Image (tube, rainbow, N blue to C red; front, side, top):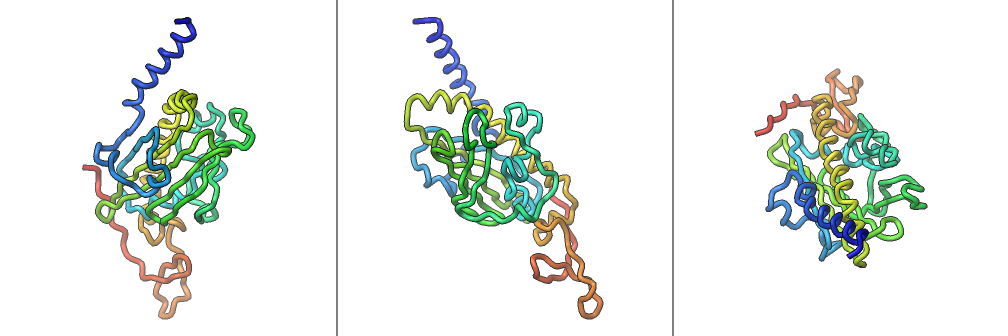
Length: 254
């Protein structure tokens, strides 16, 4: 066996052993094994990983941050230093932008800029499914991605003021040579995914309490209409009027 072959074999063994530390972060065996929307797009994945985090806010308060992800939009909320070190050029948003809130099937979410790592068109994913406040499923395939993958985001309510945020990655490999590339990219993908989970959690926690009210989450707070009949103050959201109600504090972590 040549020295180069030994090095490649050793690197492959190291990456394989490291999988247990960078895959399925923050999730239980039940969550890793459960069926989630979007799984049907790749029925027999070569690689699957499920990461998760608890957020002390309802899904509606988390969704606006998720809806604006993308290299040319709100970023992916991780470490700017790490992301820029690998040439992604993210400028992670610290506030909700109404102009980035509309997502529909067929839309494109950019993950890496054009020319990144020699890829003429960068990396992009296509929106496959959207359920506002609950589900976002992105899918990538050649030539927009080096291999077929599905990246799905799930906001699962737990009581009125808490939710479980899960991200699942499923990848299908068609050629043996792709295995090493996927294993090599695994730690980087896991780092970015973990940063996204933690980054959104921090932004939700740092947001004003009014933004944790599902009625005000997207617009960043109530808009006051002083012309309401009778002089009563009322809050409006997307053109709908409703009586304001006090915001309840979030439940601390168990």
